[in-house]
Image 1 (cartoon, rainbow, N blue to C red):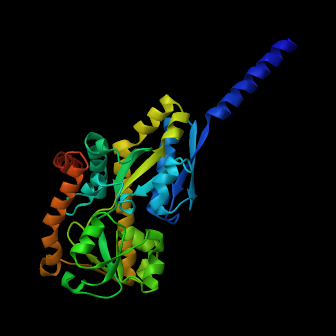
Image 2: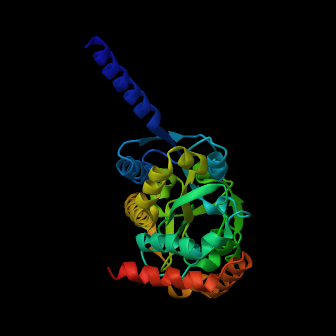
Length: 336
């Protein structure tokens, strides 16, 4: 009887040890304040979905300041984190096809645009292998980008020569087309850059300007119909981490994310944008530019669209096919 009891105890101990080994804690890298929608809404849902999909075998925690925003892809590829979100404009030499979702003139909210971003990536754009070494598990965009300035204007004809922070991508194309001077810094450094007079303004969605307290130094927010651009992101995971969790759990993780989670993330960005605009309106001004006041931008749009299509085609994928997927997917989501 004693031997049987010991045997049972040994098996129980071994099972517990095996379970402990099987459980993996995922390190999620993030780089904006905890109150930002990515950290308040998107990442918690990401971790929750993965925990549910793997029946608790994979858990997660958010860690900050593991690397600079432009270094997030390298951080994941090198094993410094298991998951991260990357803004494609920060590494323009690597990401080109992701500019397609950023072009002005696409109609729909950020949930629709994010779902379309994922679908176009899966069907066409992923063949460019720009995420080589890391695994994209969701794609997203922020709300239509706006121009935030320290001084008031009445028309975009007045912005030539202003020093504007740019994060790259189509944002940089718009900036150049409006004859503004680009100041290249990542999002967390914008407040300091503006406060010190190095920049006169920035492009951002509403959520980010509120979270970074930019309403204190940039009281004027300017919108154009559909936005100046949309910022493109991907949520990526480590190839090594997905290998380590096993084939079944890796497949379950990917199935829990993808297009549905991309749309969820886009919706979160829109909700954050609404909060940010409310905060800006309470302390500054939110001004809509259209007609003659926005004519300079309107004249740029066809050229920006054509140039991006050429860039994407040059990356070896069918830009027009991808754009058609984006437009049809956005229409599908907006009709729901």
